[in-house]
Image 1 (tube, rainbow over the protein chains, first blue to last red):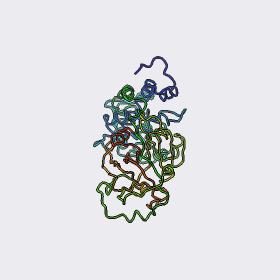
Image 2: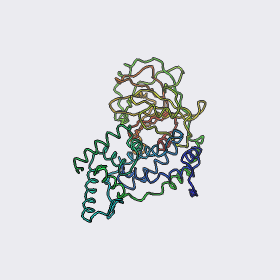
Image 3: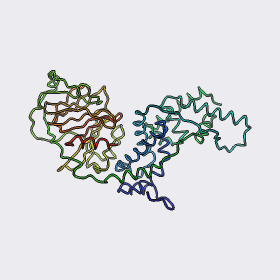
Length: 187
Length: 245
């Protein structure tokens, strides 16, 4: 792949060039979105090897499907939809799926005044409890919460990944939050 | 912001993500390894598709004799019903299969309720796109190749075991072979043209839709049932099907 030098071309330019068969342009486009594509695939497949296969296959299929990509539309949700489809296909053959996990020893960046050690431990325990509760949600709710809050996708992007309407995303997230509150409580 | 939402927001920055692989280079390498356009050898002449206008009543199919076919009995392709029938009747040449309304590719994606899949770049972009309103969710057909020459038809719809949409009637000259596409069930119908028709909501053959079809590959891809017509060899059909996405 040609290295990206200086300011990257606008996404739309890359899409148009890729449509005309410019593989370098498409590679730049993939590079822009590969992290979120891979993490979305990992969220669905539950393991890195399947996620890599699914994300790569999805990117190849997206290239071949560029002719039906709507000009001017955002590329990311469109790609994520294909990644999600491919990941679901991949997962069906996978035997084992791990839940989401926290990095050991990591603390979130916070603008608040430094909390006491006790408060830090309690907050970390609470996050661990919340994550456990997220992993225990039914799959549609788990994906909705993870897309919106853990991958920080927009509602539109979440709808693309889930293959549903915006209204469904809202209601699914709302139901999932209510269920999490039952399990972990809320202030 | 509630405590729960705050905790979720904080979790996003401390999740354990595996390192992101270099997809861009891997994808570029794969795309460069594939010829960008189809070659004449890649597609074959489509078998003649002929209209059989109101020749057989639907009941003719119900009266099929006790010819059993292990492959057809356990077809495993959602939305497709296939069975052995007496030899296909002679039919006059006529118009082509009713694929529905011709629409733009972008419009087609809005008219069906599933994610459209396409053949890969080796076939080039489809020359035409058609959409039918039945079965529920719609059926889409992509036509690859030229009207005068070689063509492949790729039809896709959301198949369910509960509602069959396509009927395949196979005479003695047509063979049915169980194959697989990307690990999912598939059936390759080849030999003499077989009868194909749409089924109505009650599972009855719509006689005005009855046609003859050439070699056809039917397979599942997740919730979709796919049908590729026009490849004269199994290898060609499977090659295209494996790359559909």
